[in-house]
Length: 252
Image (tube, rainbow, N blue to C red; front, side):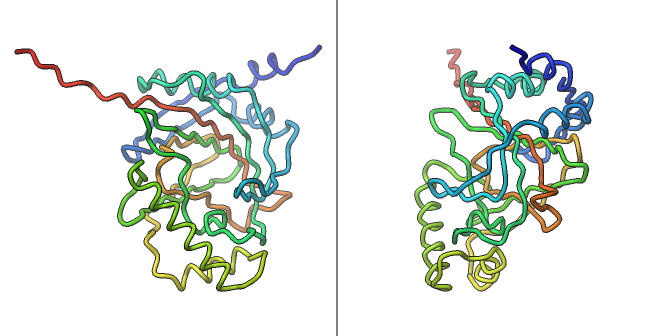
């Protein structure tokens, strides 16, 4: 049986040429792949699943799934260079093909005009997200504050979820219909006195990547240029970072 392993090993060697610390929770990686074109062809030409509404997740686009070990092999150089300790069993890797679509099924967080989080720190573990730009044009991810906080803690996560729930209820009551367009969500949000504020639109070029903590308030920046025929293609690697803090040693 012919496998993809040989083609992957030949096409997708990571380079990770340079690291730029955007903030204490965000890193920009230059020249992620040694050969961007062959790596891009490998990932974008795999079979795809169409995203469907499921358990509150509504995404317009397609995705390709890959074995966990591929995520580990791609990010390993970054981990070693930056002396990061990870959970070997936590890796998840997906190639996302997102595009601007009118229907959002009535939620603010999936309109791309409102932030979300992908986890909080728990038991000295914090999920990290690496997004590699496979497009031939720059893309962006937006970062926000909530009540002047850049990231969500375990102490405030229930409050954040309740805030989202109330805002979604107000949205549905405002329009009193099922499917709500992204433009309608934006119009609604513009009339609200929100506790969130956009603070950074982080752009990254083809073959650049960003790594950020999952508890940051963020959203994908999916503009009208990205269509079903020309989607926003990003390789997303998720893994758990160990955040064990050094213990104070008493030498007396």
